Length: 454
Ligand code: PMP
Image (cartoon, rainbow, N blue to C red; front, side, top):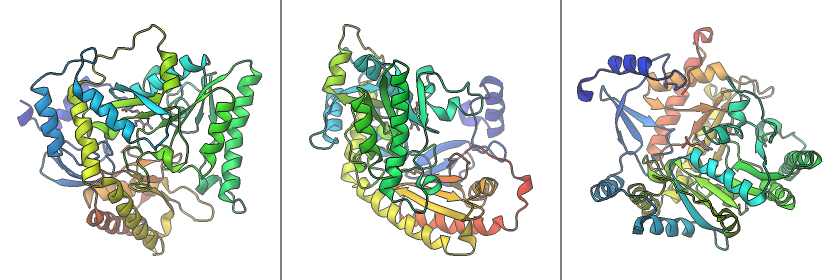
């Protein structure tokens, strides 16, 4: 039956059976029915190929044959759980620990199935280890969809439908160098000023007679619009949090696994060593696989008699995918490729900024293949060009078959986080198309443009 269903039939059935809280990309213009993936392209029911600039879970390329083979071979044998011994979970754990920087305290692994589950467990580990409850997070952070991690995700609790900030969560301003750093401030001064907001929250918690369990942060903030913390920010924050007895959690769900180019993990770029790291999206290249890696100390506190069992966490099929992914990242030098391709991308975007069409680009930032293009109506006032971005996204889809994603506080940042196979020719396709889309913004009637979730 599936083979013969039209897109219209699928859409109608979905509207009937799913809750509308589950959004559909490009629903206002033309939702896509994706039936196949290939490297950094997705193919729809009509056979059209789309250049994928946004789906970081397909890290080594969509439907990469080696991953498909590894998963199929294991699924044909068994997919039991972690109460039985199996070589794959331990081999994967060993490989994962090998990716950690030399001398790191990160030595113990839990396998789970999603980023939300990873952060949920990280929260539990932090609270068990410290005996404290309060958590400090950064404005517009998103750490997942369970009840517990929603409560530490200001993007949700302060956004549409949110119920406000829970009493035990404390939100600090986002260290956004483009919008928050003043002209006379050095990077270091800005980092210190932003870090002081965390100190304030820690003192506030203490003043309430409580303690802070954890500071959660993404090493490159994705939903916030590709915000790379200024150098020195995390070093300073980590010291303050630890001085209060709290632990530091790095959420690497979006940026981990070599995407940033210079380092395998985002936190390394900041020169810090977290107590807990969470990772997911790209780990299984589309197969649900996620992990929490923590220090011996944190793992020991958790060994308190209560069993931790997760039916699917660390199943051999998902671990087979993870092993294949780690191997391909190495053998294809995808981290170095991300660095080179990202540098070329930035070069072309900076050149575009100098043209008349590119005057809407206010900032190009990020690292490797995690880049943000922030659009503004005026480079001095930095008025967000949100409607223009919605128009550009639709143009890129319909005129150029390019899939994009948009984020940031003002929904005016194109977030580039493609499969790591994305190459220079894809960059050229993307930037040439963006230039044409920018040119057409000038002739468009933006009053008719609706914001489309991507
Ligand atoms: N952390 C971050 C930074 C994320 O971006 C996301 C998902 N977008 C999550 C956690 C949750 O991951 P998942 O959707 O796999 O539960």
